[in-house]
Image 1 (tube, helix red, strand yellow):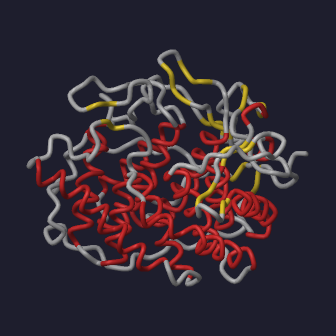
Image 2 (cartoon, one colour):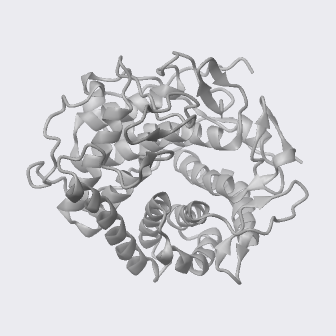
Length: 416
């Protein structure tokens, strides 16, 4: 049975943008090497694409009483692949973001379903989440990867912070505390970053006494990993601690910036901005468009980068990271980077094709050499919805510099 609920929604109330815990440092004090707003092709000013009303049409179509289907064939759910904890955790983030834009009660049913899914995914014997679930509700035996576990923590923490004062927040907090100890042993770069962001939100919620020490430990581990690269190669030609640049890369500098905001150490901000500047530069197309690393080949150091099978997760993650950097530094460079990544969904990409359908709240699964992959699975759709809300909040926070946020009449960008 498909989940009932709203489809295209009008704004009732906007949630406030969380203020920085520390004032923006003087750029010289932050010891960053990027002093100029002319270092990247994106700095010339990205095209400012319109914002759209919240639409959950496709999200509702992809969901049933158990969770959100992992894959789609075209615009239709493909139950053969079942569900995954990864996507349920991402759906929680979208629900919380939508609750900032509209009345939270609208999304209570969806949040309850997702929290229940995560609770059933948790394996108390291993302290880890299971990831894959069949269409008939059976769990596959293997524990989830570190990345998946960290995403689950982030979804729970977003609920704790975004739904304060509710039983949902308390339920999420109890599960978060049970699942948190596993994060202390994480070694994967993106898992460390996502778990750090989760602890950041959990600390804000006041519902987890254990989040503070784990946050500090993860921040130190992340800084040490990135700092080691900088020390080995100065100036760094490849300021990345892995030999291959793969997926969701911008979550790493975003986590470093979050660590600075809480701990107040300028070196963390400088390191985060330095890595983010590099990611912006190497993913800028000839015309300044966002051109993310494609997952067809990825990009190994010294080799030719993969250009296509570009994924929506890269654009959404860049929007979030650039927004965080702009909030920390006030540099127009990062505002332009966020706009360029958001524009990727709406036609500002290497092929000039629209990837997102704002009317239905859907997104194609990737950009191939011949055009979009016309399947509209859970991850890609959730990434579009996340990027839209992040950009909405960013523009509201910069109205004095940018003018009033642009709201467009709904229109369909896909011919699905």
